[in-house]
Image (tube, rainbow, N blue to C red; front, top):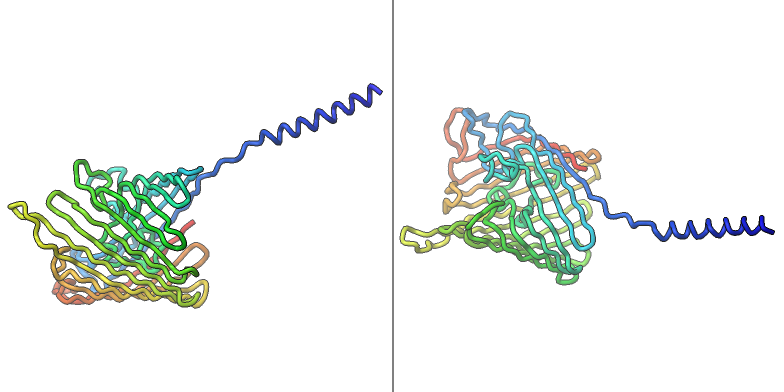
Length: 357
């Protein structure tokens, strides 16, 4: 009898011990998400210009007859409950040009693409505090996220990033609104400088085939200078193998004269259409047609430029190989021939490659 009791007691003890262990299991906390990318390219300008005249006026491909590292990126994201953080670092010429205000300082700010904190008090509202890539435009800084390797004029002369505080607000369905206050464009530190406002309205169809973004930035970028930029991005998936993209932007600027009076605003603007064709999973084709107008000489061109670009996309798992032909035709002789004479047009071949994980 005693023996049976002991066996029963051991069994009951084992049951309660197992139950206690189950009840004390600690829920595993969310782990950081790590992603990254790497891109490289070769560019050859058909004029074969001399003396470092590269016939290139847009971002990230400022070379000729040279193999170049674009950017090596690493991104860490972590969210727990209502709060989160993102650290996005980049190394290479693309990263240095992206953080161009700090190139001469050679500081750690060069490596920061994005670094921000988030707080979501509800499912409909999220606050972001820090530095983030711009909402303006169709194209993005990471090469693997674009279907053309070279960048548009609109991207190159628009904002790259903003540093400040913004709020993203869901309006229900496919619509949302963003508003924020930031340092002047592309500045991560701006002691005693004016602040600017940014905003965005986004919407789309129920089936996500059509999407639209209306973007804004405006305010004083210095005590004697101010700008206002309106931007629209549209995408439409005609079929699962053919889609369209559009980007149009207008940026006006004005300054103070010697008497402190604001001058009349002058504007540069651009417009681009993207045709994306994907006949099979491993191959795609993108044609970008851009018109860029700086006839008011705000950016130093004093001309207008038409830029057709054709890019092939060959995909092997996470690697995309992008042979590209880019042609530019300007109203005025902005480019250089091999002889050193000026010309109104030029062309380049680019072989780009981008990998992401």
